[in-house]
Image (cartoon, rainbow, N blue to C red; front, side, top):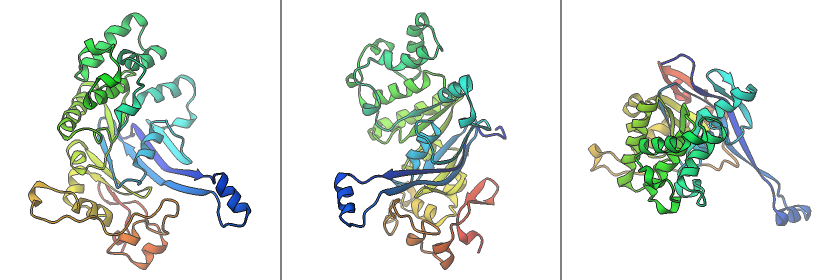
Length: 332
């Protein structure tokens, strides 16, 4: 692999401000202790995706995985930090370079039913972007669409149909085809199999793997399903309440997790070899991103909490070659 990441995030922050509605503003004027609220979605997130690898991002719902994916894909702006494409600051690129980077990173969404325009035929859904961006001519478009449909396992004869005429698995294949149409180098898959039947998930996962080999793709694979991430990812990043708490090669992370949150997360994941073991959810409730705890965000739920954890946020530091963890226990 190359030393320079294909795609990287440096200290990315994201804040969402929730403004008071009319009733709230009226109550505030009458003396109620109300004001605009700020959701802390991402807090200094850094990660790197190397060319040709699959980087898995896992964590509980609300940890900021999808927000990070949208920022990396250029769909949503960050509140702070930098996104680097092959070492260059994406926000400082202009003209042709900026457009080429936008096309190079594409996203596949969780729900294909809502991410596909129901009024457009499949041929138009797939062919619109490459035609607009001059990647194919109108004369070449028909054959180009047929090739992409075959690559994702669909019959080109169905390209004049509408999305509602397909099954869930077929619609997700259309979503993948749309992403492939602009010849991306990196695909961000945001819970791309979560909405599918179990019997279809394996087919789509295998399709991702086949396309990776055939088209030399790089993936950022966002999922709450640890079993899928263990199967498809080369490395795993674990997030908790807007922060990265651990990063490691997949085999090392599953064999010997370091951070208390990762340990608890994996302990609650069913495995075939542990069929007789009782599984329990992580104790406590995930804190609100409107008012995240001071220090380590995980300390209200951590069985190893120390006084330092309540006041000081741990740094994400190297604990072994290729392994990072953000826990004060590593510096104790």
